[in-house]
Length: 116
Image (cartoon, rainbow, N blue to C red):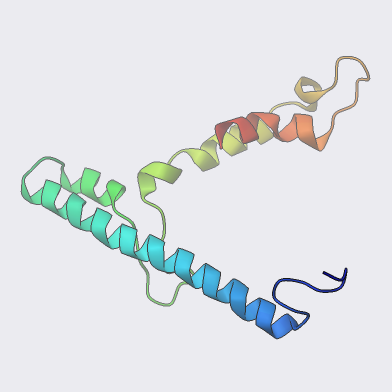
């Protein structure tokens, strides 16, 4: 195979079309999963296994006119912003390299990356 040849050819539109189809499949899988998940949570609510609040926190969300087809349940993202802000508010001295006294983006964002 020549160096300039690729599995999809050299046509950028063909590559973009392929990537879009892959993304569409991923999004469709998440949409189907979220619909099934939400039905399970609705059943739990009907059987009084979870409260209204718990049900709201466990279900995927969909909003007409928003950029994403679905949004993760609140329980998966709850507290993330507070954790990030508390880490960013820490004094720079806590992020310095003990050998050089300098700090890097890696050391600065390490506590946040550990939570993700």
